Length: 255
Image 1 (cartoon, rainbow, N blue to C red):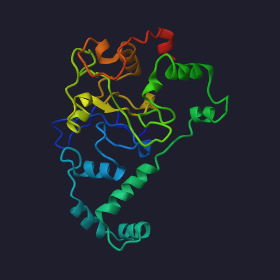
Image 2: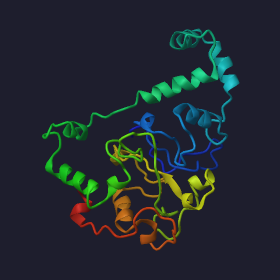
Image 3: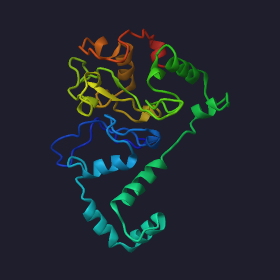
Image 4: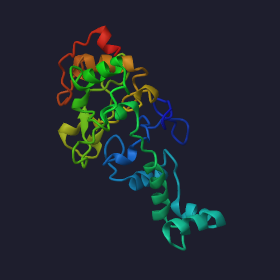
């Protein structure tokens, strides 16, 4: 499942509740400039620390982890070799986790081959789909090429968020109550704003959106085709996604 869990939302540690948001892929996560859907974390190390310490996720204790790891000779030798240090610390534990995530980078798909000049790497249907993605469907307006997420080229130093008006349930009757970046930056334009995640490998990484509300890509495409939350009839005064219908044909939706 391309380093996702296949769930709308995973289970909290006490198993009586779910976590707040959907689990995005780890692939190419190291190429983002901010982590989490609300962009609150500036690095993989900071993100890992947040998850390990979070009472709903791992509820971990770094001091206990250091004590336990330090009793294992193999781990001690590995940490000494990797970090030239004679003690295991919180910092090099987080660095080790981040190093693993940094290894999960893949920019060698057939699309990448095609963009590098191999005209045989993609078939006509795929080329038509890409032209729609970058043209009439306006997907590339937010999912920037080549990472297909909100990391803005050409400097790749900023990750954008958008207000889409994602509904609470698939019937589209109410907007999701998760206020997104507004919890971090208490300014009106950030109400319901969430990071633009990658659509690489998206056929394998559902359910979709920050709350996992849509199980299929057909539902996602219909949401965008109708103009997001406003197109569904929801009141989203600060929606950044255009509310104009895309008017995609059935054939275009299947591209």
